[in-house]
Picture 1 (cartoon, one colour):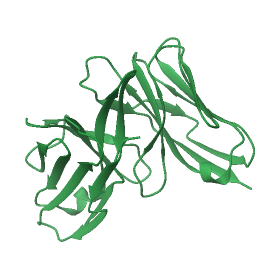
Picture 2 (picture 1 turned 180 degrees about the vertical axis):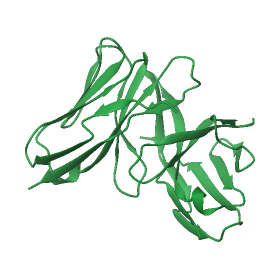
Picture 3 (picture 1 turned 120 degrees about the vertical axis):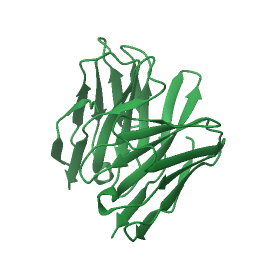
Picture 4 (picture 1 turned 180 degrees about the horizontal axis):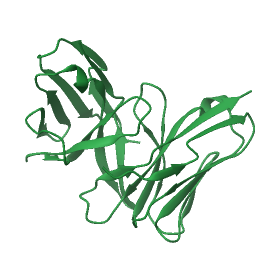
Length: 112
Length: 117
């Protein structure tokens, strides 16, 4: 099935640094969701975006719904060790019976 | 957020046996749930959409007779892997659709790891 392109594939950063990742598609989406998955667990919803251009924050996390509706961005400020994990974007298109298309994932590793 | 549980969290079975996985919405009703599978170091792949009171809809390439889905109540969907084989070993994750004022989202269960020997 289709997957969204996520970049970077992995990141190795130092504690305290800011992190940026993005998700792109050739198709238009009407909803963008960002999830974090820890090893052996299910994804946890971080931020939901429903409108083109929308900028939403959740603590140190900020996500944006791209104007073209074909991309989304997630930023993490002042990273801490517990930010380690895999971040997935997911998009929903109109008329797809609520199905989500997932990104390929960004693996984040944080050093002290 | 909405809470979704799965049971069991892990299961080991012999080849040829059937395994049932339960997905429950704990504090809300879910007319629509989804079943995904995830292989190591890969993303989630949608297997099927589970609709309360009606037949599930399967994604292309997913055998409906192999992966039986039953959504008999507004808080429970089950996935049965029939005649499991080693290639069915994977991480199975369910989610429930939640509609709130601004739009829809999905909340995920903790996953079930299946190992078929």
